[in-house]
Image (cartoon, rainbow, N blue to C red; front, side, top):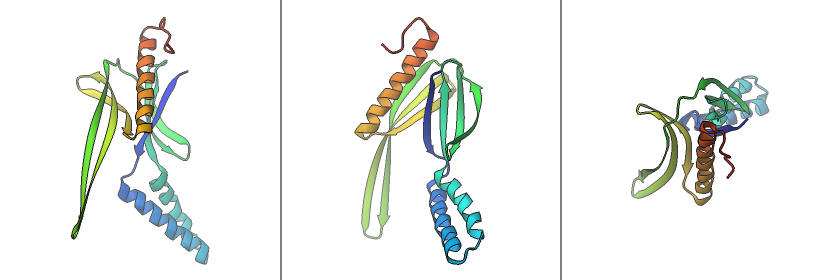
Length: 163
């Protein structure tokens, strides 16, 4: 059974991830310094804020997909029927961020490759976001080839997707 699996991004925004790190440090301090059990209560949400991700799994054979919440190796989500895919959209997005602190200014440009499955004119499903360093670019090309071969193979089972 061929299942495409891609963890997309952190579930919580950066502010909550940083809050998770701070809660973990403070919780560990409480546990080590005074063995205060409130530290455990702080560590649990800290781990959830810091390590949870979202992702998508696509089973091309059964024509199902699942958006999931991923934490500690567990995936929580429900399988849905995969609509008929019209085409695969691949595009480059460019993000620009400028940071100003008093007299210091710095600009950062981030390029990302976005892979979408288009089901109809009004519905699309994001299946991959990759930063464009050279390694991730080739990984995204492999994923694109895998998706396209799977789409062709499961529409026409007589075609071998490995060729």
